[in-house]
Image (cartoon, rainbow, N blue to C red; front, side):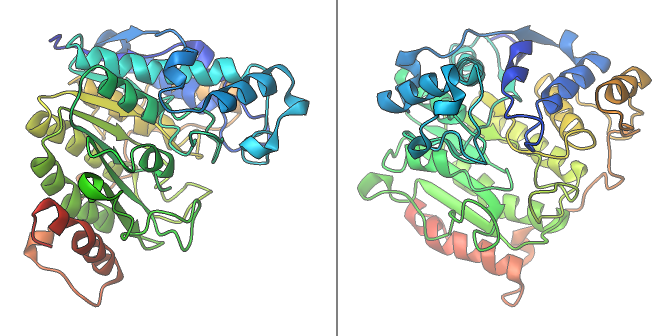
Amino acid sequence: MSGRGLLMWDEAVTKYDFGPSHPMDPVRLALTMGLVRAYGLDRAVDVVAAKPAGDSTLRLVHREDYVAAVRAASEDPAGADQSYGLGTVDDPAFAGMHEASALIAGQSVGAAEAVWRGNAAHAVNFAGGLHHAMPGAASGFCIYNDASLAIARLLELGAERVAYVDVDVHHGDGVQAAFWDDPRVLTISLHEHPRTLFPQTGWPEETGGSGAAEGSAVNVALPAGTGDEGWLRAFHAVVPELLAGFRPQVLVSQHGADTHFEDPLAHLAVSLDAQRAVQEACHELAHAHADGKWVALGGGGYEVVDVVPRSWTHLVGIAAHQPVDPESVIPSTWRDEVYARTRQLGPARMTDGRWPVRLRAWEDGYDPADRLDQSILATRRSVFPLHGLLA
């Protein structure tokens, strides 16, 4: 296995663009790659562009009629069929939509193939993580579900156990749906409670299909306002034990940056420093339980200057085994790029001033009157016994 990490990148992924008024501004991708280069991380990894996902790959998850509808909307955005979730407020149709979406999907599939075949220990596609797309519909800014396609490709290549850990502020509903009845895939999602946020799914009682698949879906629904300490507590109270028991051959993780306290579309209060801590934890868990095989994806994140580029640059640095010092001063060349592209001032350092973040371990006891602990306990009681673990 190559000791170097792999970064999937093609400038054309920035053509995944729903328009100037849409919160998913592709400048977040360009600025992330700019910051990666400013820190020299593009020299610490192999930067590779994979080919777009073809129809046979897309059909591993998506229905043929849906792919045809995306192609049609891509050629004629005004005629998009809204019954497929296309041409809506969340997912406006745009020229070249199929090509841009298939390209992003191709990067995640390529990352999975490289890691499975031993060509790289870790692979990152921060343009990916589009976890809401369903087999037959677009949803939540997501056209093709690249995370599900990467996992499906791993299964096609012979993987028998794949773990998916999703720490986006929104529930990873599309990935859960794709593998609901498949015991080979363990999906774990930590997200804001469905009472207060799209897509209103991800309750702790959602534990997977029947038979062998029961317990293959895990959901931690966090109260609005949860900050660093609670977010890290929830992650460490649930994820490590389940991965240790499941023994995945590959870990796929989704690192949406929209848990951040500055994000305009959600209500958690997590810092960049806690996001970095969870990225480090996923890296360590991949080495502990998956022979180091780790595919890391981006996801949501709508504070596109101050948060997303820093968070995903940390992710690339961790995957490259060249982590960026949180206290480091961001190169002025990147801040100049930020101003040139956005007319905003970029952040000065790679921290929110909370590093190192504090962890209050579940093993030290819990408070049954605390809303966060109630959420963690609900998840453990729903799913841990199905894995032979104590709640």
